[in-house]
Image 1 (cartoon, rainbow, N blue to C red):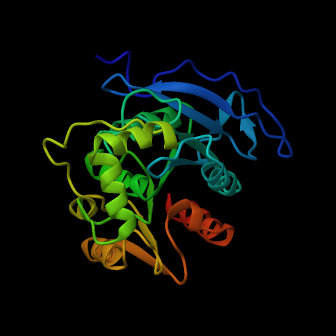
Image 2: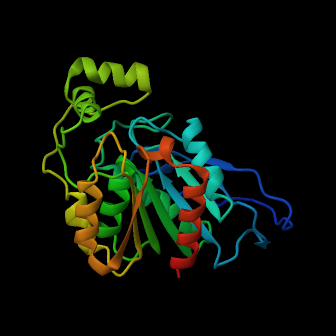
Length: 279
């Protein structure tokens, strides 16, 4: 049973500050619609505040990490710091990851975690919200935008799969072992701080490629490396085809997979794109 509405927390007491100052990041726990406690960190970025909150047009990035990530991982903090040059950033740990409660469902019920984070961003006073997801998080931002229409103003999916159950690369075969085998889930718990649910999906959730057509008219950016070791380029091309003229595809030369492969230049371009497209 839920402990309250998605994203419900006490309102922040951040004080007004000048353009050259920034408030300290605010860490708090959110509660999803199914009652899972989600660890989150909000960085207001370098922005002029009015009274006790952001100006209405100030963009916030809600960052959805990849499988086995969490808000304290250095690669997640690096991405958050890069996006904070363009607006506020709200990061969170998916269920089963880091200090969040519950167990990972590897992209299924994680849409509830993202919904709570987006709701939190709105409650903080942001009128413009862009979701940015990597790998598993990339699939989640696509499904969230489809299942919660018009709740965000721009969507960026980086290194996401187009379809479920893909085992065509060695890293994905290892990931399936981690998720489906009891010994693999032990490695996930103690080696990666990721607690994985033992049950299979029932029903199988909407796939990313099925979700994409439902996102329009929200602006959509699909980013993928042509050297991705997990998902080859047929995945982003499937997503782009499903998006049609509604979406943009950036196929990045020499880029590998997800947060580790996203350099500062790419993150700056993503930030610029979101600022320009999010209304």
